[in-house]
Image 1 (cartoon, rainbow, N blue to C red):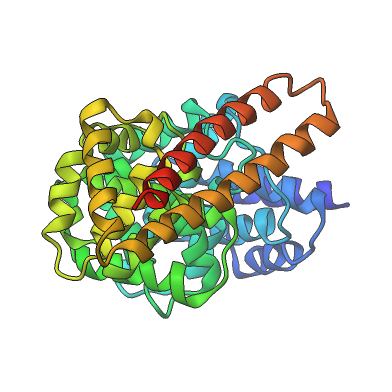
Image 2: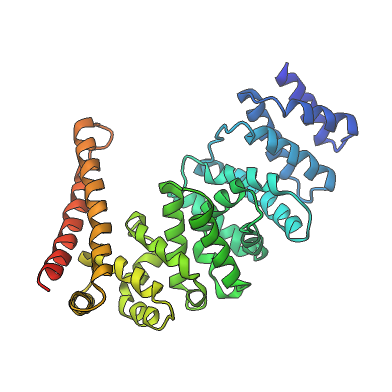
Length: 364
């Protein structure tokens, strides 16, 4: 029966014959939290948004359809083979972000579109999806302005959570100086959400530190990092080491040390120094020498408590990875042959960093 209902609705909407009665019928059927409704609603959504110039009626149908597709937390798999459908979700999202910036309230339509991307099975690593996102943003400069507008203190938690996830995916373009707008305010709102509002798990911790490395990579944006946001660097170990902004930051570690020394409250320097000890094994000789020199000076002055903080944070991560190694070893999963080896390599590197700092502190 559901198939027949959606077949008739699709034929009707495909011919642009929307009436209050057919819209009411679609509203009613999309309230049903069933897999069949989700799949049929998603198919209807992609058909409607594919129109070259959707009318207001088209967008009304699309809003009802995206609700039916995603309101029951059923994940629609967006795979590289279905990237044209991702383009349609982005088209829908971009249009409604523009309406939101103009003062219309479409927050829940925006939430569903964002969650469709962020909840994808391939988030955040699939290169085809990332390329699709970046190409779309390049061709639609207003998109990131709309994204930044979602991070308001009054915005729903789900909206800010999903927006943070997508911001992490697109941080390279979010921090393009050509898109500069109210940077300090955005940084403050992001910090308030991540630090103040709720307890967050590893997903949001990883997203937040990815965003922070994106800010550090940009000379314009790093000037506007909120003081509290610097502490997200305590999660720097969660960042993929192949991330472009992360690699740039480590390669320019001394430059960032000099920058953070010039900040008034010391938070930037404190947390950037934590990052350098977490990744001490990846630094070149010049940077290592400077990091050790700073540690020796701190160990005989007022900086001992900060060194102890560094050691404690690294020690916590060492304990966590040891547990991970044990769990992977016990599981002995044939589908993850390199998982234990990778975890052991990370453990050895981090233990080396920990021991090096401990020796400096112990030799004060």
